[in-house]
Length: 105
Image 1: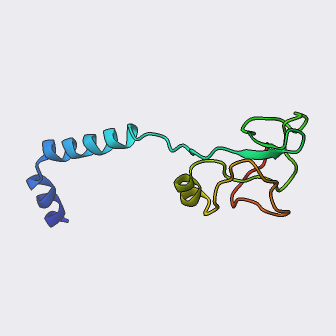
Image 2 (image 1 turned 180 degrees about the horizontal axis):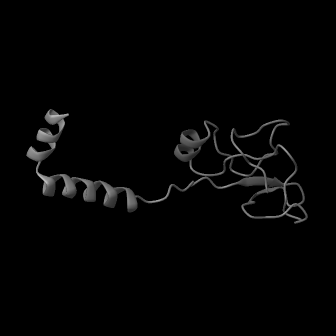
């Protein structure tokens, strides 16, 4: 026990406090993590791909189930979803779905 107390006596208390303050400040100011994915779906009425982020189920632009697909740049789609983007000119294949949570809730 004496060895522990002697070791604590020899530690620079101000240096230890400074290290702890830097660690706490670093933890306090880390930015929150945000997702950058956008949700697109195929509109059966207009036959175009539309942004569906935040739309409700009774909205006329709401796409049919399992028609979600990434409609961003090729690099973004392959990086986020491993799915090639669409240009909005074709109807999606039945069951084609981007991995991840694409519910409208």
